[in-house]
Length: 303
Image: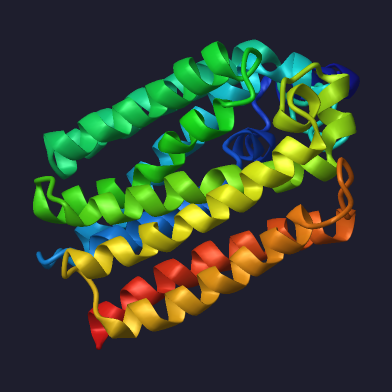
């Protein structure tokens, strides 16, 4: 009798979703960036929002981002299994099956969008829905396996959260949140192409057309440097529209110039070759750079 109970218990445990693995499907690192940038968008808006509404709005946006991440892992599970960077994700390891990931992602998408519409406003819910659909259908399904420019176009999905944070507070769109969008959009290519340089073997295994594989190392280095230079007018833009002052502008220019220098050093390396340490430095610094830029938005708002 006791053996039968143990057998039933073990079977029921196998049938239950492993919630820790489902959480991993949501790409927690990406979610943390979404939470942070969305919070900056909300806190720098001219309208005051109650703490409860702010936390709820940011939570729902992060759930929407997590839902998109789960759907991305559902569709790309075959690619993830081939890459050392992603082979330990829940689906390739068999801890979550594809159907569970699909159901989880779709359910979470619906809940996050409907709840954001109910608790905040329709424009925020509409942008969140657009973000999820863009990330899943445009970036993941349509572009990822077809073009190296997927990084450029797909960057739009990651650029929406601070805009949603702004609309949660204001219930409207204006030119100011465009500054957030442009910064993340133009930051994304150099960030991911630096990664693709020293992880090109991984992408080659999965037959993903990343820039180093389709256009070569030299073209990738050039594009990284060019996009880093494009960050200069982009970070000046919020100052030009009187969204921020010198408290933001001066340090952000120094941070950007240092980013330009790192990318130039990578570009100026031997022709058709690259220094893996410099590529890793660019990837690491780019994360710190984006974080500090958004911190400066907050500091400028306070001061």
